[in-house]
Image: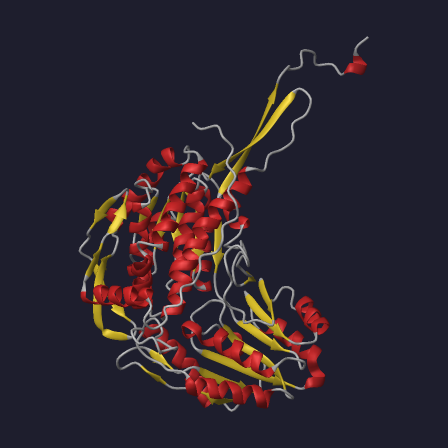
Length: 542
């Protein structure tokens, strides 16, 4: 064992490549998109390093061209799943005892592999399987994944430095143990980087995981798994089990060795998992750690002093990048009467200018929503608004799923601040605006705070900095990530740790030290050099 003390410096965030027409990275990416489009991936479950082809398969469909399948994955069965816990715990014996610097070196190697050798593989699979354009895939699948891996090694180094003071005749130390059991990780479709972090944050701290990827993101997640293996991750540290949530949770959530759940997804699913854990509390060796980031109904609040162009551009990008399928996407906006005509005109111009279509055309700003179920759900909200007397359409309002699941960027203006599309998460390219009288600013701020059960992200725009500060304070619990004169999306690892409370999750801040602390169980050790030899206190001795 190397007894040196290591100092990990804070890393630089991964640079975002430009992919300009004619650039080398653009050509490499397009070549890789062609290769993956023509191939047909056959993706197994991976448990303890063994590949399981169950024969119970689901096709991987392109959301922007749903007649085309580019692969299939094998759903885990209950019989195969029974091996997962044993494999994770067998790996736990070795992985948890390794020097943390060895674990960190594997994360750092994975980051380097994604930055170079596999950059275009991760990008292409994210674009194809999850219908992200070049920029959205680059900042997520590549840059944020790398940032999570590098920063987690750095954050771990800071945690391991925390030690208590010692005193006369004693030595005190803190041991940062991993949890006693396995961590069940449930990752979403919308961010490849989140899938990486849900596993690699617990893994960095010495845990082992059983990973259920979203069925609509298996392609990119499988390539991540292969990168982790190439980086030196021992068999069984991460176990990859695509499949149906009910089958998986019915087995794993009854396992006495369930030590935690690391989750990103819908509010309803997280609530269901929490209830299942609560029902089984008497069966577990330890109380499981439940860490979840769920939904959002994220807002932009516009002060009368705001610049209309700044508001319009950031509202458009915050609401419609990746088709609004970000838990942080702007989906409700509060605008003063004095600014609404200009802001509305600017946003309408931008919506008319946007191109929609296949990710293989780099000119398309809007691509497909993830699947037919999502398409139908979003269009249900749009149809509701069309039939209501409290709403009118400023832009969009149409969808077409004949070839791909395409929905126009849609802006609804409502006269009811508690309109359905102001309160409920839609997870699509729909932004609802309520216009408030300039002289009712405080009332509008109060309405913004109380409208939605969520508390994930929010933003205020205003050139009056004092007024912006007051609004920020008034909305203190309305958003776990708050932005002043910026869109409510785009948190960067190491700069804006991410998470919300209320119905948006446990606010354990991915991209910061707080999340890693949830995956350790500290042990305090005190050594006394010369133990007492008399039970009496000094003043009792004569």
